[in-house]
Amino acid sequence: MTRTALITGITGQDGSYLAEWLLEKNYRVVGMVRRASTENFERIQPFRDRIELLQGDLLDQWSLVRVLEKTQPDEIYNLAAMSFVPTSWDQPTLTGEFTGLGVTRLLDAMRLVCPKARFYQASSSEMFGKVRETPQNENTPFHPRSPYAVAKVYGHYITVNYRESYHLFAVSGILFNHESPRRGLEFVTRKISDGVARIKQGLASELRLGNLDSCRDWGFAGDYVRAMWLMLQQPQPSDFVIATGQSHSVRDFCEIAFSHVGLDWRKFVRQDPRFMRPAEVDHLIGDASRARRLLGWEPTISFEALVRMMVDADLERFQKRKD
Ligand code: NDP
Ligand code: GDR
Image (cartoon, rainbow, N blue to C red; front, side, top):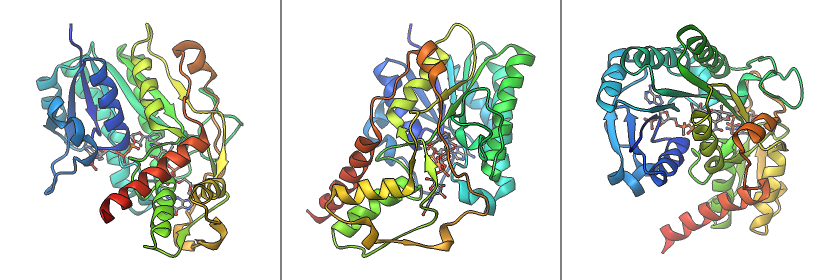
């Protein structure tokens, strides 16, 4: 029988990869999108005619109930959020509404309409923040360092709480940073790959960044959406860390990205205090051994291959514009 999946945040990086993965598995895929004066469907355009889109907003309880009533999903993937960390200091309460309380609204709608569905919450390694141990696993305590991360901690615990209170199949995936050519342009990896392509094409002469020392455990988004799906196929609901187990600095990313096109990053990268954060997360590295053991999940793309993939995609994008 065809299974139905609802994806909130389908227009985002992860939503687009997850939709493709579920379509390959013959799911009926329904995406929840918020109304905008101009459609923002670039990432889902290639398979737009194979999915259904319904309007709804994490701020509006009844819109969520209606979307679930119309969809009757077997699986719900809650990927929608205000996901850019710096913006969360400028809009802390709105971030709390989307990224934190939005999770409760969706869980309540699910309790009402489809309590037998399976629910995935997009939790984040940012919850570890000022880390208490290295590497971080499912039992590492949280110390969030931004309004975004505080909201994600709330979203994580409300998912755990609804599982324990109402016996919902609700799981939280604690995913470390994952990137791709579809990453938003403001995140550091894509900002660098885009910057390298611009400089290579003669469209820019420098790239302004913030903290070059911060280290992240970066993987490929296409690999990470598989882990989301695997979590919902388990016999019992539980939470998982998903990571590569390798950490690199922003500086490392620059070095590989620039050298891939034959340039020396030191000649082009400038540090700019505008991109420094009020409180930084210095070093994240995940221990995904539980996911390896129970889900059989492994990343397939190395850090170096990821950087090259992103730079090549941006170079091609600028080349196409020229042609
Ligand atoms: P994106 O920023 O690319 O996508 C976010 C999505 O959320 C967009 O589709 C956006 O819609 C939607 N959205 C935002 N606010 C609302 C709202 N009020 N109602 C409905 N939809 C809304 O994020 P990613 O794809 O990178 O990440 C997916 C999820 O995973 C997020 O929750 C993020 O916080 C989390 N996460 C991401 C990680 C990563 O490294 N990428 C790591 C760990 C967690 P619109 O197009 O209209 O703006
Ligand atoms: P992050 O991703 O905050 O880890 O959150 P981001 O790419 O924004 O920053 C990573 C690190 O790079 C440093 N940095 C810069 N960052 C940006 N955006 N721009 C710069 O110019 C710059 N210079 C240095 C940052 O200080 C930081 O240390 C991402 C998001 O996808 C979250 O939604 C998700 O939860 C986490 O990953 C896991």
